[in-house]
Length: 148
View 1: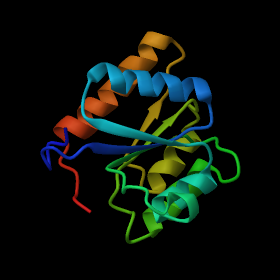
View 2 (view 1 turned 120 degrees about the vertical axis):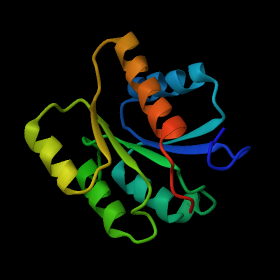
View 3 (view 1 turned 30 degrees about the vertical axis):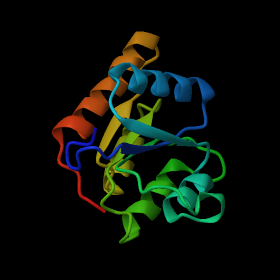
View 4 (view 1 turned 90 degrees about the vertical axis):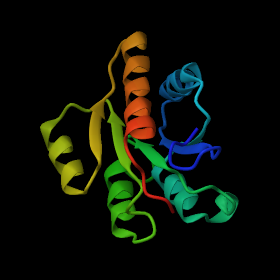
């Protein structure tokens, strides 16, 4: 449950093109048994359509949290992040970069684009699930998120 609005499910948008990582992320959220809804889009163009409620996403909910990979088809994660943070209707949604890149330039660039945090995906299954659970615990249990 969302601690800010009791009874309201937590809406999470996962922007990830790797089916294995999508499956692991969904599993980690399921294991915590919190009331949340994980929505997945596979590329940057779809992410922006979801967030702007365009086309097939016209009735999409506003996410409480975005988990964004950097290496995406059609529109790079950095471009998506920049568009989110430039849009006055979207900029307050926390964006967690969840990526395999450990490159210092990616870390610096995403913080310059106002990412809320940068997390490198671990390689091992148990470590990956632990990282997703820690993101969920921090962002959805501890942090006070803005209402729409």
